[in-house]
Length: 424
Image: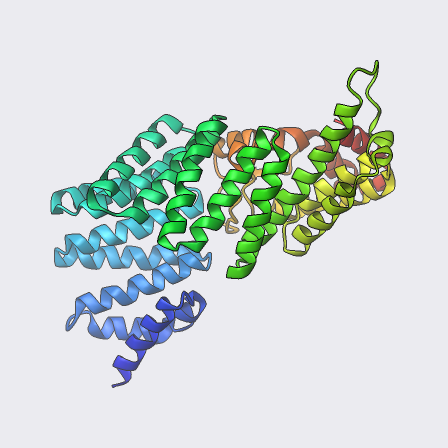
């Protein structure tokens, strides 16, 4: 009876996406899995899977991989090829989250091979989608598109409209990453339409954010603001805090760029464009206040990158001291965060992770050379419009580290360098 209650509780927690609740039951659940290993290995394996996925969903990737490897070994010992395939898929997803895309590809290739041998077309389709995400994350966009096209074709043949919708979104991301914003918009519109039809509210939120970024990068700030507003409102309804913060950041950036574009447009034909101090101040546009409001909202939602955009906004408005204050906090945060974050894939790493350190600033860290390239290109995060590309901030970040953090000099010692950065 007690065993049955525990299994039921684990299932209820999984159904409710309460993964913290799942991992909180680890001690009892592992004891039950050991007890059931001989009598009911399938259920024992499901318990290990639940714990492994739970740790993965809560960011404890090392522990997740340990449990999922146990699950895979158990399935292999039993000759349960379907169980091995599921374990490989879950391991692949963990490795994607860890930024180890080589290992992730290996797991998803194993998943695809086993599913092909078993005639599991749905499993093959899912593996193709995950492989596409791996290739895109390492910049191999041609191979990524190939995988996502295969996923879409198989999902269509299976009548899996949710899979087709997901494939459209992934294809849109591939096009976006190569700067083909027109094609990306078409794909994301398809994703949005299908998500609406399927009642996938979270998918609609994601597609709105992707459509907003496409518009932002083509200078269509009005349309970007419209999409970011919809993303924010829908995310608020779903109580998805990270999507709200991302949408608020996008709104703030789009409004700031719209104001600047408006000012520069009015200045067209003049022998010299007005400097930042005179431009936005003279404009008197309500967009400045709106931009600040949304950037502060993003900051309150935990998106610290909003500090950088608040610095640019204040600088454009001629408020140098306020701009410098925001920028100094942002740089200090970058130094502090760099201890356990990859600047390329934006994933937190454990203390034992082997990471590369940027030779220029001696601050930013990376999972690999590929991730170092990602950080300076950063197309997938908005091409430098939303998230600062590392190559743009490397010089000033290195100077801040050397003079202020390491040598203990006054922040004023970097004043001219910070102002020059903001003037770019």
